Length: 289
Ligand code: SAM
Image 1 (cartoon, rainbow, N blue to C red):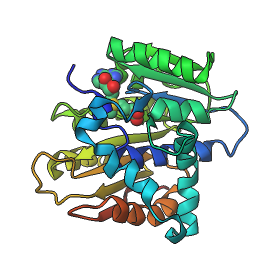
Image 2 (spheres, helix red, strand yellow; image 1 turned 180 degrees about the horizontal axis):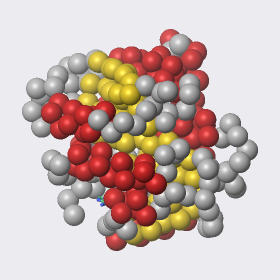
Image 3 (cartoon, protein in one colour; image 1 turned 90 degrees about the vertical axis):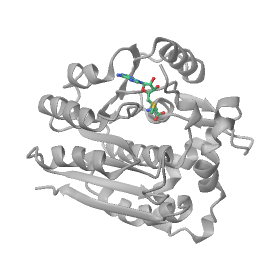
């Protein structure tokens, strides 16, 4: 195992992914009935930013560090509203004010879950899964609605669907250690979607070079599936070698108002996180019907 998320926790790509995650969950909570969440690549749940590993890259300082330092008075009210739930979770984990603990997707999902909601967290690597289980149990107490499993997320994306609930979401957040992971993600999504076409799917990807991303987008565009949104942030010129130059999300069946929300939010995030580039884009790969 090479990939460990502690080196990247709280970077700008995590911020975008986790802000969108909180917004999708908030929309799901507009109805009282319980929802289902599948987190196919869960990681360890939360991250100590004062650790040696996080300090080695310092990526969080260019991500959540910048977001917390922004001038909140100058943020448009609609954008402040989109960020409020996410920043509230960050603040609740760091009550002293100093940024130390960063919530991964399991912590965000668990913290937002109501007693009627269920979540499944899949992590392939046994040590990481053990850390996930113990950390989350310590932080949140035992909760029969939160299920942790050491398994292959690509298999779960098919096998755990459809859920018994009618509504819910799937977060797919692989490590992208292999070049073919973009295509793999698009193809694995299609298998899951065939089993549960009404779920919301949020597929995360890094932008290093353009070609791999476009290949995955093409698979989605050719799938005949409606209602696929693509949101991107680019913070470095794309020819910058070996860097995470940008990040994106494919969101399938996004909640109705999420598009307009992202339209206001993404340019603000591009300004905050941008370094040698400050770009954002939002497009329908295929529009809703
Ligand atoms: N989703 C997490 C978050 O937002 O906090 C971060 C996940 S991290 C990017 C990717 C995780 O996937 C790593 O912890 C890695 O060990 C795990 N992983 C790698 N291959 C996997 C697979 N086939 N199935 C499930 N988990 C996998």
